[in-house]
Length: 583
Image 1 (cartoon, helix red, strand yellow):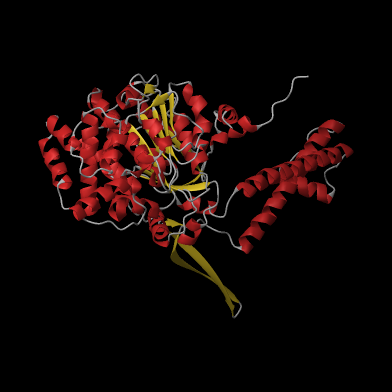
Image 2 (tube, rainbow, N blue to C red):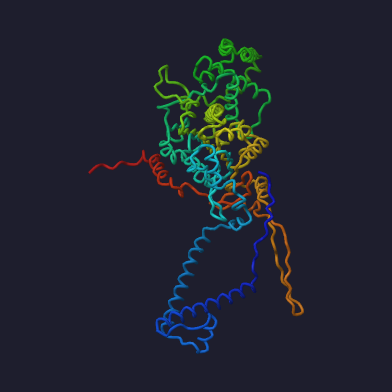
């Protein structure tokens, strides 16, 4: 999505003289038409026959007294005038209502993309792609909104990747996350730091397949009494162990925190080795933290060596037998990365309850094969966050879907998997995500990464990573509420300019001169974007001009009654309301 130069000319604006001239002409035509209708109908009612002449002949004939004006014509004229007044009042009410719904930025939509300019986002285009991919065209894609200029609905196809930047409380959940979940034709993967998205969609999604709510920090009131997930099931070799360790490292690091080139890298490598040791010996993941509190315990080294991972065993040996100060620093760094494992509530979700655990165990590969399932992963920021586990679970499901796609016809999933990564920077700091984004789109894994600001993404992926994520997205949506000048200036440049015609009038020596001047102005400047009104968003898509949309929250969709019922059924206050005593 490169910057565009939208130099559209300003629409012609009539001056006061022109408006007055056309107003007088319109009034004259209206009076003539009323008189003509009144005379014709009045004569018929009075039995006078048919008057001769055109509109102006009859009008001037009535004024001169040459054409009779019976009482019936007066009645007809009164009725016609009354109907005209009622029509004007009704039109004024309709357009007044529309005007009240309009916002201060809506006039800019005339300079932005409409119709052919945004054809890649049209419903027809999305439906055609859905049919080509074998998806029911009844669900053409992920809804985006409707254009302000023409009211045309826009959709992201099942090949498009999304990135959204909406400030706090701007409606990203109601207008983007929930509609995307409801539109998904197959399995859905959701991350969030609040329960609202779960409550609103879980009952509807339950009609499509099994629902799993990973809630280790008790944000939605879920308990680990029916299922659990073993993060070590993700670890099949040293490569997967390194990936899982990276999730722990990135998820435990505060935004903007300074890192140590040696100890952070060495601590992450140590954690990877210990995760591999626990996995090959089928131990619970909490044993990893126990090993981290016992720096001289060489059990992990012997376990990975026995499993044939000799180089990983040598790596562990190098740390275990290192000088005390160096070893202590490496183990201390790794302990910080794995600190969430000390939380007993979190541990209950990721460790078995004895040898014969009656709970179901979530398997990522089974989840992506069971079309229609929904996995919600919840976490919040702060101490002992479950963010590393949410990131690991998200990555495990996405990679399982990628593996399934690689052996499916055309190298993509038969039914797209939709991933809504709400609050991605806070709860799902997946470092490799920008590099995988475009690749996932070709596999039928449709992701929507939702952030509160550009800086949030920079904290997780760095400036280059955030730019890569933005560029790899086919559809980018800005929903307002951001106050970062550099980001807003970039958007304003992408939106482009228009040619504005200004007129000046001068009077001298009995002559009136009108001069016109053409100037270039931005369609929307950073101040407009920072104060973007609620209910409006800007869409930047590959192959399409930027366009202004009216957002379509779930309350306006056919799913609204079912969503309200789901919210009411899972309202946490229901458990605390006094029960009525039967009379």
